[in-house]
Image (cartoon, rainbow, N blue to C red; front, top):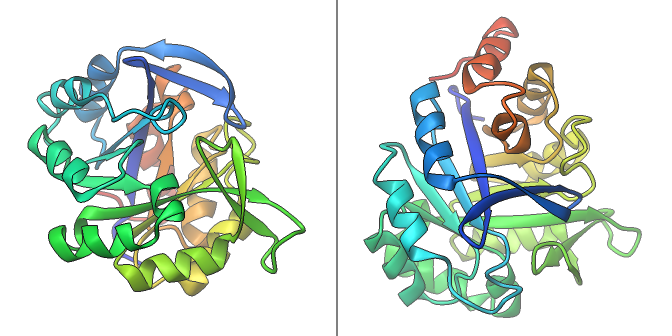
Length: 253
């Protein structure tokens, strides 16, 4: 586990607007991505994650113009995911300001995509985005989903994460669909299992509801903690989270 814990706000974007739901359902609008990105940068966010949550479902590319305008407002690492299907997509996203790309559905459909991106751009530019559900159908008790959580695969989440790292993924963004939007806390069991197998940084996502929820995720093994709606609604700031982590003896930037 890294010494310094990163705090990462996530912008889930659909049709150019930030949205958020519960368990990936009933999305509601939360604001303008460019304005929110600037706000989080000013608050001291360490990185920013931009996920075009309907790009894969709609079978289209990520909204490049929104990514470009977002990148112009923030001077911290920007990860962009949603609809990334080829190395050319990665090139285009880097051209408009993305530092890293998140890949999910396309890599499950064609795992070799991970090798291609890592070979061309390096592991540091490749984030495997895992939308994970609890399931009795897999050995670990966790299954991977695609298309914004709408389609369940037969892939065991832990086995897939291990394979993705071997293929060149430089980071795991582990999003618990069961915890997503519930504000009941991160899925600590899932975080710990991912930490146990991972040789790369693990980002915990899904379930944050109050500043005290973040430290347990770090203790469970997260190198970075990610949240969305609690920041968008103004329920807490990046500073609130960093203060809570510091009070728990966890160092942040």
